[in-house]
Image 1 (cartoon, one colour):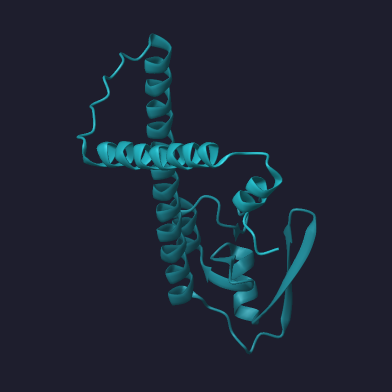
Image 2 (tube, one colour):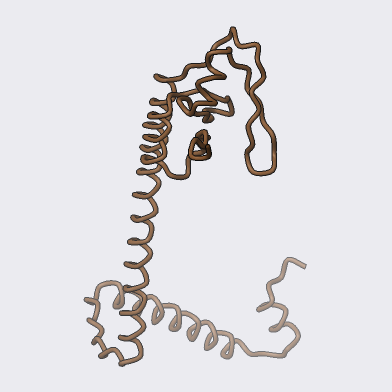
Length: 174
């Protein structure tokens, strides 16, 4: 069983010694030829590929993709700028509300006001209730909390951020 295939073929009489030698020589020749061609490729300088001129369609596609990329970058820049401005406005409005809030823990009168179809309420003092009725105070929200602010500050908040909810008393009806 330890006999190689070469020995087994010789014993069976299927091949002659001459045929085996010829096959081995051919195998060696192929091996050295493959190594030589590998070495030639490794040591030969790489040939410069000639650039083929791009077709009109490829050129058009390349220009279009560049234009789309620029448009996306511009749109992203606009979005980032808008987000930055919105954040600045929010901070400015928040600071105004914090510095001018007139909420009182002593309030025991329930003051009702309407937002859309919902009735909301806020506990105020008697003086604040009168000022709300006269239109001297306004109501706004900061962090989900209802805040009383002077009417002038409410107007200023509306000019800074028109989307901010500020409830101003309607004093035009008499």
